[in-house]
Image (cartoon, rainbow, N blue to C red):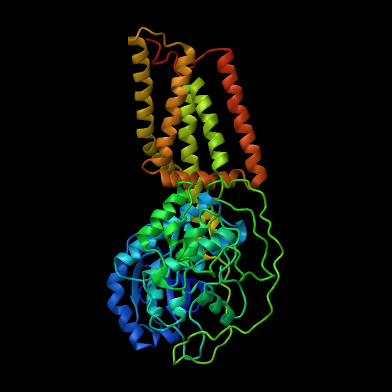
Amino acid sequence: MGPYRVIKKVGSGGMGIVYLGADPTDKPVAIKVLREHIAEDPAARSRLRRELDTLRRVRHRCVAGVVDADLENDPAYIVTEFISGPQLDTYIDDVGPLSRPGLVNLGHGLSGALDAIHDVDVVHRDLKPGNILLFEERPVVIDFGIAQLADDVRLTVTGLFVGTPGYVAPEVIAGARSTPATDWWGWAATLAFAATGRPPAGKGPIEVVLDRISRGRLDLEGIDEDLTPLLVDCLHPDPAARPGAAEIKTRFGRFAAGQSTADERRTAMAHPDVRPPGPARSTGDMAPRQPTALLDRPAPIVAPHTSPPHTNPPHTNPPPVNRPPNAGPATPYLEPPPPEPTTPPPAPYGRTGTIAAYALLLIAVTAAIPFVGAGVALLSAAVARFVDGSVESMHWRRSFNGPKRSNIVKEIVASPWRMVTSCVLAVGSMLVPYAVATGLIFAASQSIHRSGGRFDQYIQNAVIGIAMAIAMLIAWWGPGGASLRRASRRTANVFAPGSFGAVVCVTVFVLGAAFIGILVLSFPSLSWWPLLDGPLSFT
């Protein structure tokens, strides 16, 4: 397809079919082939062609950028960055609703993405869980270029609704122009889904779902009471009554700080039908599940939510939904066909406890035998990068070539060179942390020596352990830290899979650290092995 090689189909939606592809340099890309009702619309093609340069200016770590497009090709297609990660809705279905830290991470990431999109005068218009991928601890928004194109084709001539009904803003349903307020409505609806695991407009026939949205009768039951006031205001049916971007970010910042997002000035303006005990929830919906953190943050343990039994009101036909004059008769929403099976790389979820326990063990070893502890930490970083590179490489080989036996052979052949590069990267990433730790150790020893104190074994053990902890924090959060975090979590998933593996590893690491600590306290010693004497002996 043009200069791009199509590898396999990975998804499908109302606007087009998505393929995994590769550019001339074999870099993976996402190719979205537009459906005929979009590609054959001259006005839509002309608009997207004019705005393609604008879309390319969107540069944000939480936005999958537009790489290329060819609207004259048959079929027409748009090329974007390929993001290897699960969709938000799939993640929530598999793991459960997000906890407060996860919601904060999601909300901040999406708000930054919307700011970047709105800064170039583009409105996404179709922000929803299915258009959000999770990659390296952050949400990534996709399809904003195609959503802009859809602004010209809201309803097809057959009456089939374009988009996901449960996440279409009221003004879009009414046929009004989309504005940034439309995207902030989608932001709030997405957070509501992430917090509960339920679509805020519930389920059912398309006319019923759209009517709930138009009247603001949304289900916010079970959402953190600190976040609910902000979502209520953002989901107001009238765009003019919703808070602006600056106010939303300020109030959401309060939620991130553990405070309420309530705004007393807006209490009187709140729409009466947008409320926590929303009636949109159907009897077939599942009960709220235990919240979980996004990607790697541990979830707080909370008691299961309970609510009084819900009684369905008498059935009445909803009022008609405003539709553009040229729209055809209403038809039920058609779900896109399921995507073909793919082989995504293992997602690095929830390994903070395992990694923290291992870090504690390394700190204890370093406090007793500095060179051994530092060497093991360096080797661990190299092994983590090696495992991460091997898993990622195998994923791409399977994506490009399919499940062939030759993939394993090629990985074995590439392993020696990958280990060399992993060691080089590990050494490079630890130079600054170890330099800082060494400086801290010598500064502490000289300070104690000059003050007339004695730099005895207990103090030496404590100073070296603290310096190692600081070095590990610098390596984890400093330059190159993102790749180290991803590699460490993926390695933990490989060597300690599942909850049982995590519990066993944490127990062993913590007991090992405690054992070393007891030995050091009982028999004060500091070994500089493999050296005969250490650099601190002069003190």
